[in-house]
Image (cartoon, rainbow, N blue to C red; front, side, top):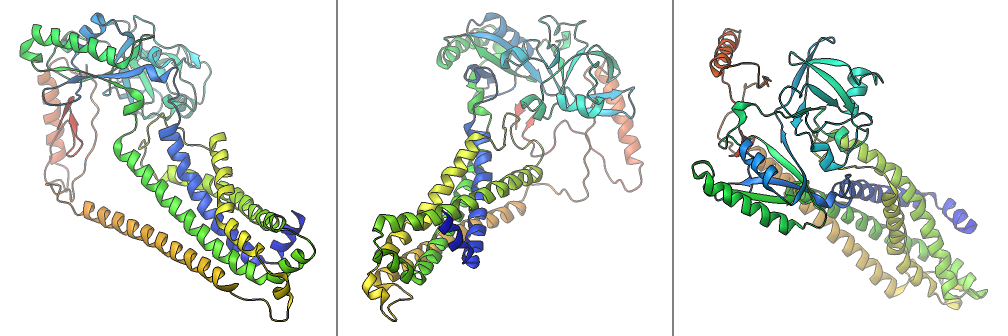
Length: 505
């Protein structure tokens, strides 16, 4: 090891190039594998995540859809396969007033058993009581740890405090744990989903639902049981439910979309190709360096060093380079992870994804470093150990090329390096070309000079639809009168968003 260090110090050019090449290749692989590990490989951070399922309505000719209130209540009351079942409505954002400037806080409304499904407890206070999703008892709220720290200064006395949310008083009953999926979620608070008389319909599909399978119940058994319930509902209420069914899916199978999964695998293949290119390049450099050290190796062989001793010495140098490059790559990978997370659109990764450097990432980096040392060092080491001491010790016996075998190996490495680079560049070119074609695609509308704004309106702000329409008309008149405004329109969903009121479009 000491001799390897001295040898590398005497070749600063080779050492610096090798370390930079390995740091880039290993760092990129560490960063992308951290995303693959955090998004695809780690189990969901919940108690027994295999038992958590999503339950959807199945429209005629479709696969999944939002749920109506009465259908959900029938599912919840008639099923024998779920330990808990909870509904969620994403339209739960509220406006916080009475504490500085008014602020809109994204949130959701959920059934009381929602947190029981995931097996998560509050770090301060408690989660919802079983009856707190009933009318008259639902004016309570649970805060995310992020909101508790950023908006309320991590006040330990927050539990029991009353907040004014969308004009109504709500008591804080709990704060969720830090650094978990409920802290990384876009939602910053949770309120009970209390059904009002106007919600009791089978025609308005406005919710989604989660459930936890009872011990010993398989997904197939749960699907069969829910199919039977769906068939009974369709027969009893044909006007609203004819042809409709139920879809049951494991949460862990649906948490990552196909596009994100494909993107991660493409990135992993790309950085793998970068590492292979670097290995081929380093192998060529090592071969050239081995040819220059032919006389030194001949002297060692003359003094009794066997082939394995020579290979061991040369591999020690390569492992030292790979280990140091791996350490630098780990630091670079950490920086790349932080940079990619900042560059990614907010909440583009599932909240369950924990992208970080953990033991599995350290083991991956160690394995890649050792594999890299073998890839770029083994063949040159074996080739360099096969020297003829007599001919190499003669005057002029050293050869810059090391013979025909040496030349063939270098040629093979160059061909491999160029081929991998060509594949990588061709893939990058196709990806960039596809991206520009996507930007130029005809969306069917012209968004030039079009501005959008969200207008959160509490569900119970207006007692009658006519009052809401009057409010919207007043806003329409005032906006049209603003300088520079040519036209105004209101919608419940933006173009290309894909969903509106629970129905896919």
